[in-house]
Length: 284
Image 1 (cartoon, rainbow, N blue to C red):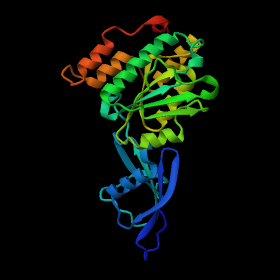
Image 2: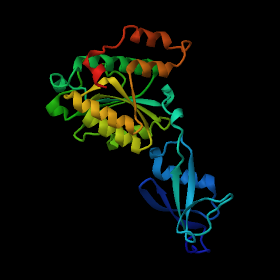
Image 3: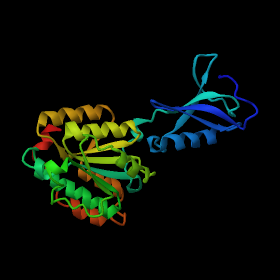
Image 4: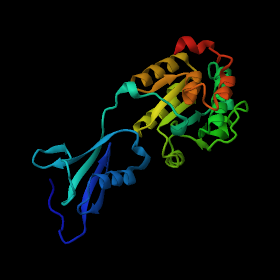
């Protein structure tokens, strides 16, 4: 493994690596698997999806590569460790629950109204999603791209009770204040994302979230662009990365899951009339 630490001390230096990150720290001599997992969580926080399974590996000087920790491993010498997510069966992905979900509403602003295709329709569907989020107690984060120049979120969207409304100039919604908000929601593993534009802010937000271990659901009937070609190819690209392309009704019914859910009738009222299909349908 690595060179011995000073045996007279109670702690030993360890390099903790996760994804593309590496941070030096220390743990008590004799620390085992559970202590090491907690150390990874303390260093990398919500970047680690606690719903997934992981394996800890240590670097072996003998083999010149990382190997799985042997049974009963404890840290006694200076070493390098990394946390590796196990491959998840894709058939298990895609379920939503209110307790582990957050909604992201991206840049649904007044100045985009004349430029974005079928903007009125995606506003209508976005309002359904926001109403459903309030009924089910799901946190909502709302971004506004350069609101000084592009205006605030359209008045048709009721933002009552949203957790965070924030301005941005970066295309991705994943800003430091958003990461703080997500850290305050440690149970969240799924993000339902909608807004504009599909091939810019939606795409970059989705990729940033996936890189941080979140499962992303893009609501196709609440997401658009100025160009239907841009929208179409963005959704195709995102679907190939494992991001889930879905619809508003599918999301809302997944979140209640059962007609006996106490909020089912309220959700049923929202979806009683089908969402507008508009010209988005043939361009997904």
